[in-house]
Length: 326
Image (cartoon, rainbow, N blue to C red; front, side, top):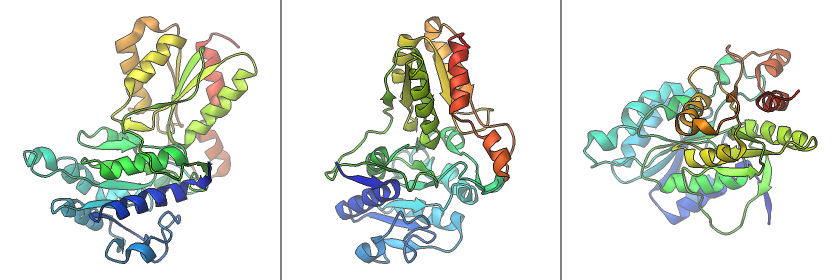
C-alpha cells in the first residue's frame, strides 16, 4: 500500500469529494493561490478554479458566515481555519448559527458544513496560538467533532464529514501534516462516531486521540517490554463518542488511563471518566487516571513547554499507578 503524508490525505479527501459533488467547495485564508498555509490544498485551485477554491480576507467571522449561509441554498462548504485559535473570531457563526439552524428551522435547513484546521499546541507558538478546542465544540449539541491521529483515518473521516448533513468540526495538527502513513488508492469511508483499537492488550486501557496519541503508543510499547500489555483506543470522533468500545475494553482490563492534550478542567477525559464510573463502575479495579497539560496558558519557552505537555513517561507513571506497581 502506498505511503503518503497527512496533508496529502486531507487534499485527496477534499479533491475526491469535489469531483464527486459540485456543491462542495473550499474557502479560507491562503487556500488557493498559496496552496494552503500547510499545503493541504496543493493543486486544488488549478483543478477546480477560483469559484470553488476561494481565498478570503482575514475575516473568520465573515467567511464562516458566508459558508453557513451557503448551505441554505444547497452548498456543502469546507471552511479552513489557519488555526482553530482564529476560529474564536467566527465562533458565533459556528455555535449560534451552524449548530442551531436545523432545530430553529424545524428541520427545513440542514447545515452540511465542515470547519477544519489545526488545533492544540505546535511548538513555540505562544499562549494564544496553542489551545485545544475539542471540548469547547463538543460541548455544543448540533456539532460533530472529529480529531484524527493519522493519514488513513484523516482521509476516511474527512470524506464522511463532507457527506454528512450536520456541521462538523474537523481538527488536525500542524505537527502532523508531515506524518506519513498507509492510505489506499481506492475510495473508502470511515464512519463518524466509531473509535479504533490501535493496540490490543489485557492489562490497562489507554484512551487518547489526535497527535498526543503517539505518546500513548510509545508508552504502551515500553510497558510491553516489562510484560504489561496496554490496549490503546483512538477515539477519532469526540462527538458522537464511541462509549461502548471504551466500556468493553475496560470490562476486559479493569483499569483506565486517559491521555488528552488539554487543560485539566471540564475536558473530554472528565466526560469519559464520568461515563465509565456511571455505567461500569463495578468493573474498575483502580481509580481512573487522566493525564492533561498543566493548568496554565501554554508557555513559549521550550523548556517550560516540555514540562507543560504530557508525554509517554506520564502515561507509564499513570499505568503503574492503576496497576499498583512501581
